[in-house]
Length: 51
Length: 387
Image 1: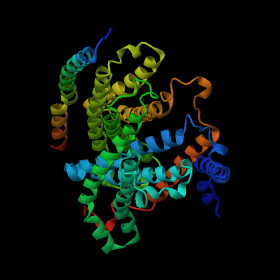
Image 2: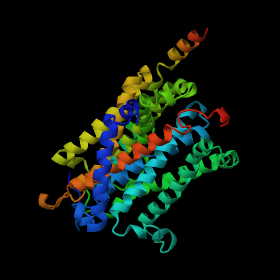
Image 3: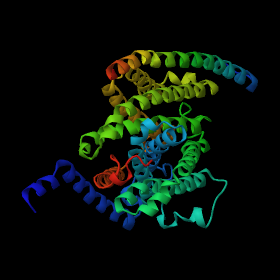
């Protein structure tokens, strides 16, 4: 992609970063849900072991 | 000496360490009698070699477990990780002490190391900021570590006094670490024409800081794993009971921090519009670093934490540690001066590698000396639950 002005460059780069940031936020939600998905099961197991 | 004592002295590691110490002593004499040229491949194009790229950049990053663990326990109140604090503080203290020790080999006139602190402060220099922070943080770590040494020495009054400073020292340690971990990355902002665009970014300071947190958490797991077998007899019931919880908790934290690091790396690529470099040889190497040693450990930590797979987490901690070492090597050595013809590129001499190995072995020996004597993996009987 050709850039003729600094404004062209910044517009393109910032557009890319804003899209990335949106995807990253969604990615974090997904990661958190993935990591914590088994917490309730593990807690229940732990609870059973103690009784 | 009895035959049993001889047997315990001449273990494979001790023999290896003995050889490394002898080689290190020889290289030390060479370095301080013949100058830097006698043992290094450094020149005007490459004034910073592995003594900076490995001993300093990696040493400081790998020692980040100290401030992350103590912040988790004393600032965020995660008391369930308390047994990990002392080993982490000791590793951090030795890490920083060895950074300063190794710096004596690297700077031309090491006796002038205190000059910027006491005589000629260059307050507009990042290097001054790094030097001041390392000087202050090494002092903080020494005081934090000294609680264990004072318990061992039986100096109860002094120990009580130092122990009261714990929270203050932790806060001070976090502030200083935030400053100099990022400033080590900021040092490279001065060289946009020398560092390859894939690694050069105005986000370098925050990349260095965030990756230091990830590797700090990983080092606690990694060091705990390595210590488990040789020092098992020194670990008390509390340490052993909390060990798996520390690994699982730190793995979850490291997964989130690595995801943040990956995000910052991606944003840096986008902000500078450097995508085109990805389809080149340098791009392939960059992707090896980012996908293989940031994205992959992030995913493996997440799986390990979710499935409670301790074995997977332990292997992942090694992968993360290697990944951050690779990143520091890429920034300071591999991608630095990338435009120079290969004949003028830097490759460390055997002397430089020897001194770096010597420094690491000295660290391991001091660590072993301390943990076999002082209450690091166990609580001192006089101070049970006195934290």
